[in-house]
Length: 200
Image (cartoon, rainbow, N blue to C red):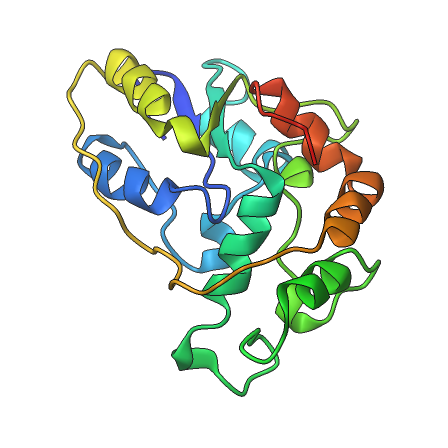
């Protein structure tokens, strides 16, 4: 949270916000780093639990910003991240699961543990389902988010790489990708709001 700039960066998981966090920490007035469930504070949680505190009960309104990723790429990053050796053999591991099976599980009403990664659309939505952030940026154009932050904070930023998912071949069948578009249209609608290509 940046008090003078009147800005809050919400950290959508797997969108490069850990790298942003590292660059921004020296300039932030406050930051939630742990536990992870609190670090990745959604729009709704911010509005319900933190807004009154940070905004002095409406006396100093803060704008919200977030970064989102193309839906298949976002799921791919989660899939690769959960295939890492450190969690192999646990219920969170995707090491023995195909990407098609991971996406299939993610689409379930109650996903198994390895596919419980939430949804970007819900993360940035207000209670009524509308977009809950004032500034939305694309993960593949993170330089635009950095430029925006540099302008608001009046300081140059140097962005590194961190929390990168391990390399792993990822192939999604055409049938599963078509199903993803059909059953999770809100994810692609969100992507389209930042100029993302929606062709399956």
